[in-house]
Length: 86
Image (cartoon, rainbow, N blue to C red; front, side):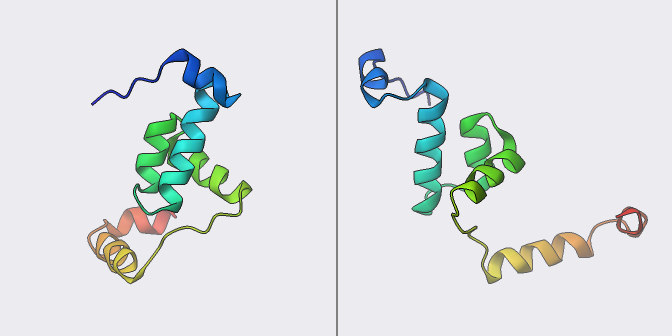
């Protein structure tokens, strides 16, 4: 799905198109509507830079017990040779 905004609407915010994308993604993330990965894709920043943007704004990451279990499961299935390189 493509979301289009009228140029006048964008101009009325006083933000560039990219700044508006970031503002929208940050707000959606704060509200728990999107993930870091989705925010990174939405803004074109990628996950790491989107996380940095959240950090600059002092926005806490959403990371709960389910996320921890998913990460632990991923690590269990990760090749040991790769883990040793880390």
